[in-house]
Image (cartoon, rainbow, N blue to C red; front, side, top):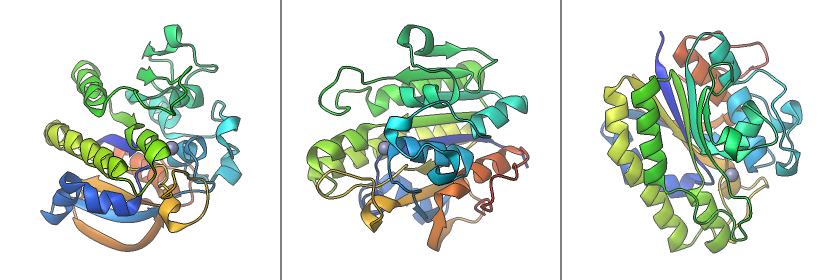
Amino acid sequence: MSNKVILVVVDGLKYATALGHCGFLEGQVESGKARRWRMRASLPSMSAPCYESIHTGLDPADHGITANSLLRPSTVDNVFGLASAAGKTTAAVAYSWFSVLYNAAPYEPVRDQETEDTSKPIQYGRFFDDAGRTDFHLGLPSDADLCAQVDRLLGRHRPDYLLLHTLSCDSVGHVYGGSSWQYDRSATVVDSTLGKHVPAWREAGYRVLVTADHGFTDCGYHGGTNDDVRDVAFYDIGHPSPGISDGAVSQRAVAPTVLGLMGIDIPAQMKEAPLD
Ligand SMILES: [Zn+2]
């Protein structure tokens, strides 16, 4: 089987908030169009370590990016590199850290912000950055703007794999906390924005996977091991067996799941079975 895949990473969206405040995604499950798992984020439950875990199928202890401050180019097999090497077209609308992980370091906006280079692991990239901000990431591109970028890339390049990454929930969570109405509302805004775009992505032949890198504590942090920071939802919209999977699965399963859907050989380093 060979499918085109869009992976949506909603940064910092915890499991309970996805189930409680993402009515579009839950409606896809309820109406038999999607399957949902409870996924355990890798440790530490921080962004850069989990971005790399999502794309390599390895825990931070094994891929080596064990702190945000250790952000550097990936040194192991990853979804972008493997897809590109297999002749697939890759794209991302994402935070600059993904450009550093898979394309070029350090991040240079003039060079990297709009990447169109078929020799790169991320061939078509639209990256945003928060350099110079003091309010976490508040004020970054809206979910609506990011989805418009996605639609533009889909229309121009028909990528086989596209990553959409939004920091909207994460930034609100850092300022107001994971039990605030502001955080709940930001989850609903992402969800309703996806609700506007996902049907067309499905019509265009994409499997749409939606997950998060990590969750949130009530007081606005993440990094530890408790359920609120570690549990995230994983939705597969278009899964042939819709419904809900009880029991937790590992974030290490994301990379082999994406590769399996795309018909790309799964390297031996990825020991977790693809979700099915
Ligand atoms: Zn994050």
